[in-house]
Amino acid sequence: MNSSRRTTLRITGDTPRRRGQDRGRQARDGITRAWQVYEELFATVAAGNARTLDVAALALRTVRATRAWVPELVAEMQGVAEGAGMPFWTIAALNARTEILAEAGAPRTGECSTLVRCGPRTTGGQCWDWHQELADAWHLQTVTGDAQGFAGITEHGILAKIGVNEAGVGVLFNILGHADDAATGVPVHLVARQVLGTAGSFAEAVGMLTGAPVSASTVITVVTADRAASVELAPAGSAVVAPDDRGWLVRTNHFLAPALAAGELRGRREPETYDRHRLLTERVLTHDGGPGTDALDSEATGPETSRLETSRQETSGQEACGRDGSSRDASRREASGPDATDGAARGPDRPDGAALGSDALAPDGPDGAAPGPGRLDPGALVRLLTAHRDDGAEVCCHAPAEGRLGSRWATLATVAVDPAERCLRVHDGGPCSAGPGTWTPLTAPRR
Image 1 (spheres, one colour):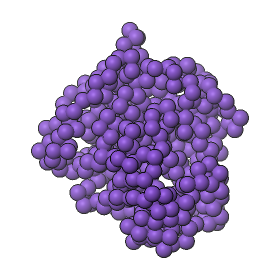
Image 2 (cartoon, helix red, strand yellow):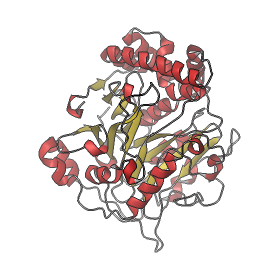
Image 3 (cartoon, rainbow, N blue to C red):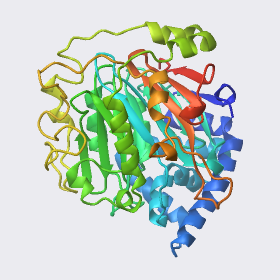
């Protein structure tokens, strides 16, 4: 499906419940179809691992954890159920699909790849890979009525996933796997929703993430106009991972923080995540920050898109990539389990990047200067992410023609985010099919 035809929901409401009701009414048919696929997916994956699942009980268990953390998120899901005319537990299960699939023992093949270039104009993006059978089960969205208006993409019935808000706080999303993953805590998709709807700054977003009581693993990369960091979340704790010395963050589907990598589950089981990380790391080393999509897209996408290519937000070298240490230490939690306290994540220097020490969010080069200003615009992002098996790693993922549900993975969307403009662009499909006119721009609305 071409991105120009992808549904955009404009969600409004002055209370969480009313926002949910609006979402449920607009996406009623899509939510029903998505639930039918997920219901089958849960059962298929569980059966393949000789497990049985009580999906309703698991979903409601995550609801209890969410109500204790941010009850407004539960009210919003209740509104979705009312608007869509579906049982509440099914909406809760959709939002907890990562946690329920962890309980089912789901394998993960061809999951997402993320790139961020930090500098005076920090930009980034990712491939979103998921099951081909759910290729029509997602939409674009703008949401107003919370503390921050935001825009992004998400699946039908799920409150949020990838996006950027009106304060210029963006989030990118990669699933990880830890040996302790389960469906007992706050779903990671709801954590992303809370950041997008309420975080007014980089420090607020990182602090919110490191404090979230999750029970399944993910890495949410926070991107603002001049800062970026990946926050790894797991039942064992959390860790903040800095850009490397050149200002790059490369994320696939394994932990980089040593304390959390010790509990790695899916990365060891599925080594392709390391192949993708290695290939992308090699590619960004030679990235020159040269021409991107100015020529590619300015003709085809109109004045709003062209404005993104010509507007610049200048920041001083002292501000670039989070060199202001005043908020760094307050926004980090040790990756050491339930009794974690504030402080830097322990362990040796992380592989492929900066050390997780007291300067974890200050990726200065060897001469003390901030990383260079090369911008990762959509054209550059596409060139870096377009890689298939013959290239050494399947970053751009294509589903086989045959196979059972749960085995047919595809890159469903390619997303580029520009926090300085509070904007993201979405291409419907993998990066290898992106071209003039295929990008849909979305700007975070004012609340």
